[in-house]
Image (cartoon, rainbow, N blue to C red; front, side, top):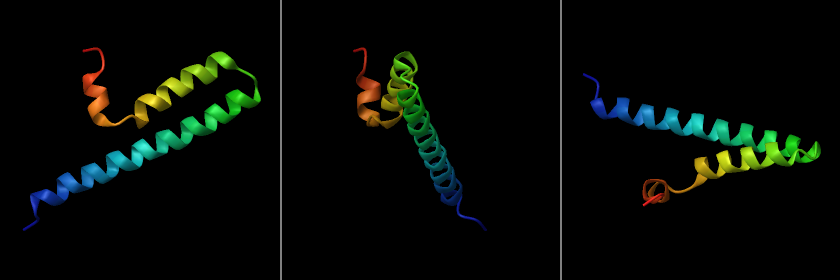
Length: 64
C-alpha cells in the first residue's frame, strides 16, 4: 500500500521545480532585456519575477 502523503509530497516537489525553472527563465530574459536596453520588457519581467519570489504571506495580504 502506498502512503497518500507521498503523492502530496511529489506534487510539492514538482511545483517547486517548475517555479525554480520559471525563475531561471525570467532571469535569463531579464538579462537579455538589459542587454537590448529594452526598459519596458525589463520592467514587465522584473514585476513577474517579484511576484514569483515574494513570500506567500505577502501575496495574500496585497490589496487589503
